[in-house]
Image (cartoon, rainbow, N blue to C red; front, side):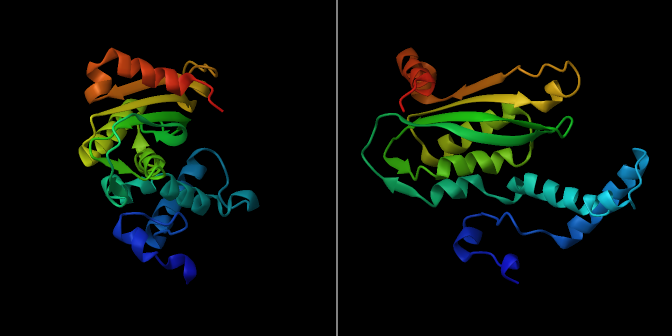
Length: 211
């Protein structure tokens, strides 16, 4: 079937099609969710819930498909030699992930910059790296560091900056129930860490309305 085929190039660099599912895993997860529905006091056999366990299983497999992606290979697939040494900023990258503590979503934006040191990378690859790490069970702090380290280790730039701003449903729907709180995390290397002016320029650019 068409949906069961990998694109060869994407397979080689560690991508996974979002509509590809492991039938054995889906069946196993669905069986457990059917049991969970019963334990919650529901009737899994009623019409509205008949396909819910399978739907949840497929949703979970999609939301965690980042485990099957190799973020470093995403960057290596589009590295180019270029004598550009000024800051490259990609901001307002949508982020959707799941908190590993309660398996509830958190979402927001990532702002990323790097200072090339002989190589640049295709701009679309940076959001792909964000997705690769976000589509795993996460905490925002680790997610921020993983994105930073992946770019630094692969491109070997003169510096990397990552700032993330996210809302966490584990805070909004349960616990303290603060719907409007936003969590900000940051991680820097190289020139962004050692040079106050460089870091200030990055922060100015991600907050400026340049449209």
